[in-house]
Length: 452
Ligand code: PHE
Image 1 (cartoon, helix red, strand yellow):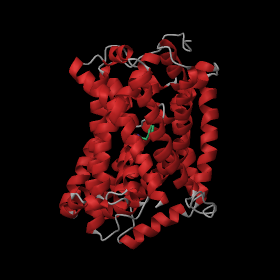
Image 2 (tube, rainbow, N blue to C red; image 1 turned 90 degrees about the vertical axis):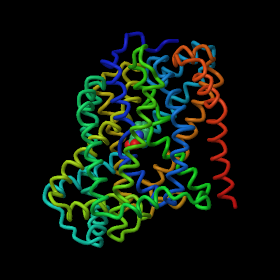
Image 3 (tube, rainbow, N blue to C red; image 1 turned 120 degrees about the vertical axis):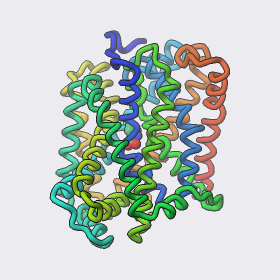
């Protein structure tokens, strides 16, 4: 039951695919969320569990998800249906595509709001930061969160930029930009980390991130770290599957996945070291939550020679990274609408964008006017983050592992992966046993943790 008869365009070469996949995975997850989660979830405990999750669960799943995309050649639902059909499995597996596409849109709704914060700080940088003290930095962030109009304005502008690209078709839209700007982002992060070393307290940052304390590892930390491994690698949301569907047959999925996982992790660690060295230097709290980088960095920029110019580049590049990730969140559903319902791409992109934008407005309000509406104690913004990262992504990762490991059949999987037999067996066994057992254990322990 093939849902995509027309030949799909492919990326221009192997590097192009690696770059766009890095573009999807490296984003606010690494630069904004990783430091803030590490800061509020026990520092090194979170970092170490996160690294283990990336290696043992994320990386194998990344390979599995790309394989489904490439073999299924279609939007996430079509890809799942095609591969399930080809390998004699039920069409119920198509549901996995749905969960992914829906989750991706939920993520996009609040992702765009956070990107809006970055737009705001870009403008602040352009006019010069006026924050000489930690209190001033905190107040300025609180003022932003307290202003729904401003949040909504930036969120709207960001969404328009995303939809604009997706409306034109992904392949042509982002390849070129990625080639230049991703390396620039990396460079500027290295410079920022060096600045953290010169002007901040790097040794405190290092200890905070890497001193292993077994006792700090709690079920909540483990679930948070697992969820973040999914989030930062863009897993389980159909994004990687959708990109994989544009991948040609000759590219090595394993190599690509290694590059993607390594790039994202490195960016996160650099961002963490830079942020925490400055956080400790200025006597700020690492656990101050979602505003961490925006309360820390302006101070650093204010005190750095040429800081404003540096800040402009920094926020521009972070925005770029957010933009390439956000595109990959919108693309799966839009490609489903165009391929399955034959809706004109621009119409599909703008109407989906509109729905996501409306939900994003609710997130903007959840910091101020609607802050009293709570879901299990969380405002809408935090609740959406929790639902997607800690529930939907791990569950869909579990399903991918079961599908590729147990249902798809070894021959079809081996045909996509084309690994040497030893390496393949190792990967396949990790996917069949370690990934599902690992995810289930994390879930169980956090459920038991709640009950206790
Ligand atoms: N990985 C992206 C980031 O770190 C977010 C993302 C999640 C993108 C899921 C696509 C799918 O910012």
